[in-house]
Image 1 (cartoon, rainbow, N blue to C red):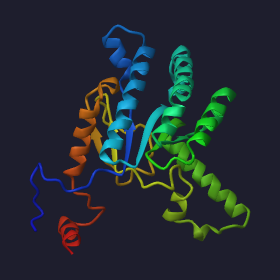
Image 2: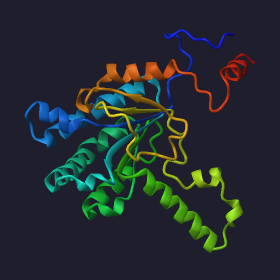
Image 3: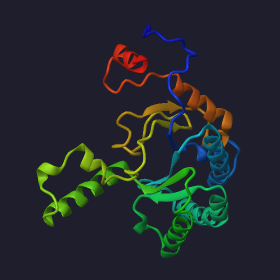
Image 4: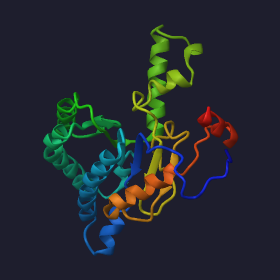
Length: 253
C-alpha cells in the first residue's frame, strides 16, 4: 500500500485520551466588555458539552488544564473567583458525574488550595471512584515540571529506603510515578485560543501526543470544533519513530 494518503482518508481510530488546554476565557470576556470571570463561567458550560462530545465518540479519558501552577500570578480577585467557581462546579456536578458513570480525578499540588476546597475534591473523587465510564481528569495547580520533579522525589525516596537501586530507574519506572500513569498517554492535545504552545502541561506524557491548535476561544469551542480536532487526528499517521512504510506493513500484516 502506498504511503501517500488522501487528505480526507481516515488512518487512526478516535483518540482514547484527549487533553485540552482551555485558553481564551479572558479574551472572550474582554471582547464582550465583560469581567474576566464571566469568561470562566462561560467556559464551565463548554466543559459540559465537551464531555458529552467525548462520550459520544468513545473517548475513554479527558484531561482538562483548568489552573496551572503559574496562574497564581493572576490578579488576586480573579484567582479568588476561580477558586469559588471550582467549588461551585464540584457541588453542582457531583451527582451528574455519578449518574453518567464519569470518574473525576484532580491532579496537581492540591496542598495549595484551601482546606474546604481540598475536602470537596476528596469528596467528589471518592463519590465517583467506582465509575467506569469516561475518566475525567482536572489539572489544577498543575505544572509539567512539578510533575517530573515529584516523580523524581518519589524515586529518590524509594532509593533511600532501599526499595530500589538507581539502576532500576528507567523510562517505565519513571512513568509509573507520573500523574495519570494508570491511563493511556494522551493521543491528542487540543489548545484553544489561538496560542501554539503547551505551557508546561503534561510535558512527560506528551512525548508522542498529536497537537491541534484552534483559534476558537474556549467558551466558543463546541462539539463541532471538537469533532474537527478529532477528524484532524484521525487523518494523521502516527509513526512513533518508524517509517511510513513500516507502519503500513504492520497494519497490513
